[in-house]
Image (cartoon, rainbow, N blue to C red; front, side, top):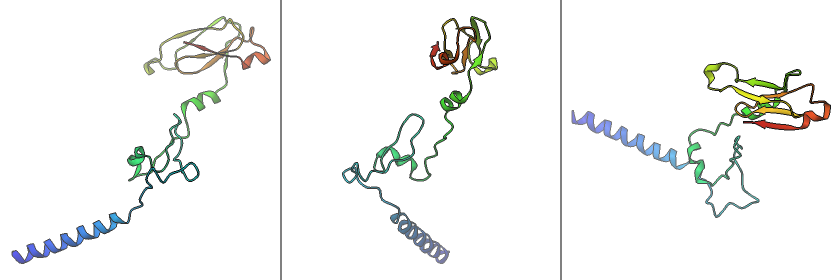
Length: 143
């Protein structure tokens, strides 16, 4: 019995020493004093504009796994969608699609020339009677 315990103890000591050796070979990050404007390497920029240099303490979350940034930001996807022509009506209703999504009904006044956006989802609408050619560049936000 003692012989098997001593053997397992030696094996566990070998494993822990090999793990210590493996962890000591990890890449070390430079200290904040070593980073200058010329040698700073920034991580991927998120949709909120966050980008930190390689020595920033906030990047410790990404030591084990890489930072994954989704390039399909909702703002970009909504901007790619063409504005909806509402004909000659002076108002329109935006409910964001399905009522279970939590978007309330928003009444948007289309009397002014230009494109009017919903304050909740960003969908854009315009009145074709009032808005002509160059007026499509005018942007209004309805809240």
